[in-house]
Image (cartoon, rainbow, N blue to C red):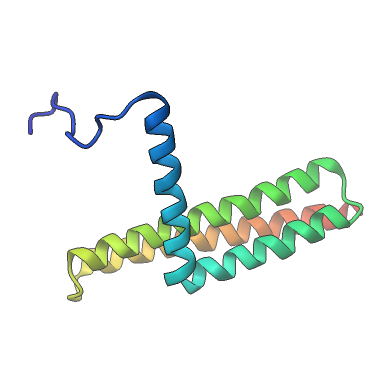
Length: 127
C-alpha cells in the first residue's frame, strides 16, 4: 500500500462510523475488564478516589484535577494493556525491544499514578 492509499477497513463515515466506533470502544473496555487485572485495579481505584474526592470538602480546582488524574490513569492503563497485547501477539519470545515496549508502558502508568498522588497531596493540603 502506498502512503497515499487509504485502508479498505476505513470505509464507514458519518453516523455509521460513530456507531461502529462506540461498539469497538465497548468491546475494548469489556476485554480490558475481563483480561487485565491491572485495569480492574485502576478502575476500582478511580471509583474509590473519585467518590472520595467528591465527598471531601476539597476546593473545586483540586476536585477537578483529582478526577482528571484518575481518568488519565485509566486511559494510560488501557494504552499500556494495548501495547502488551500487541507485543504478545507479535511474539511471546523474549526480545529486548518487546521488553522495552512493555517497560515503557509500565513507566507511563507509574508516572500517571505519581501524578495522581501529587494531586491528592496538593488537594488535601487545601482542606
